[in-house]
Amino acid sequence: MSDSEANRFTARARRYARVGTDVGGVAARIAGARLFGLDLDRGKNAAQLAAALGGLKGPIMKVAQLISTIPDALPAEYAAELAKLQSEAPPMGWAFVKRRMSAELGPDWQSKFASFDHKPSAAASLGQVHKARAHDGTELACKLQYPDMQSAVEADLKQLNLLFAVHRRMEPAIDTTEIGQEIGARIREELDYVREAKHVALYREMLGGIDLIRVPRVWPELSTMRLLTLDWLEGRRMLAFKEAPLADRNRLAQAMFTAWWFPFSRFGVIHGDPHLGNYSVFEEDGVPGGINLLDYGCIRIFPPRFVGGVVDLYHGLRDNDEALVVKAYETWGFRNLTRELIAILNIWARFIYGPLLDDRVRSIADGVKPSEYGRREAFRVHQALKEKGPVTVPREFVFMDRAAIGLGGVFLHLQAELNFYRLFNEAIQNFSLSEVASRQAAALDQAGLPHPEP
Image (cartoon, rainbow, N blue to C red; front, side, top):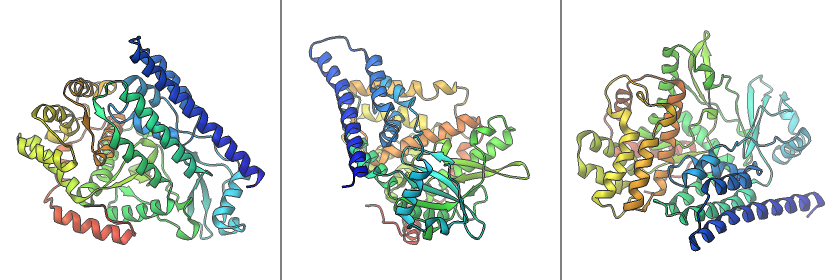
């Protein structure tokens, strides 16, 4: 091991030891307070936990942010603190970038580009993006992963178990066992840029020909396991259109709806991280034309039966068909359901499905303040599950629920007014499990991706 490698290893070890000690210390204080019947200052401990995590600026930040968006995965005080954390990481300097690029494409890597920007255009928790230009003039986006991310992610996922241990000591309404497994699986996939390149190919297959949505091409000769080179898609931030005319905002919201629901309803595929930074808006003649899809790391591929459960639950709620509702929950993997637990789950389901059940033009929140959107329902579910639970959330459900909430958040920001009922029913028109299975198999084979377990 070289001196520089040894120094990096030592720094990493100190980092993991510190976060483990700090997070473990919060858990220990909670355990002690409960053991001796002392009052527990959740707000103070939550702030200390956020402080312990906040200095890391690495993959643990992505873990923390994922947890903060899943209802009741952590106590409200902890989720609120984690939601404040920023995922922006300090970018690698040019000297470091050159070494990393040499490791991925060889010492002559610069000759493979007509130009390559020294400064990144974006920096996040796992890597950073540099704008470049191919020899044929095409503008490129080169996503370069930070060094040592594999070991950093594995260490940080171990800390995830400590975070959940904190929650288990506070009488949770939800068993987080499968949530942890699902988060770990998705984050490990995000490290594999070869897989992400296949996700891009999958989305080009699923969304090809839809004018509202643009998907870049992969440049395989300029990509590796830790470097992903795509077409640069020019666009403006989604939030730049918050004050745009309603028709423009509605067009963007419809594009987002299509980009999310079309792949799911027809192919069983969702983007599990629909936050505003993963999209930009392309313009045509000075007005919004649609959206660019920029990131393909957090993609969830479901077995077709799971898609059937989503459609069954919709029809069950719409028609007050309790048997179909129960079938849907059991299809998703919920177990030991009682009439009381079903009624509790339906509170959240009717919130998520509400706009899709309402055949009229409306906003997603429909008069509720954006800051209050979903809070009442989440509180009711939490209180009820504390009495009747806990309930184990099936791992397949985790990112479906999180993504639905994230998509709703985009609609809130845009203040869009659409007939979500009609959009959804168009998406599931003539729904057939066998056709989903057939389309999914063909698209996955075309992209070179494995099939999900049935």
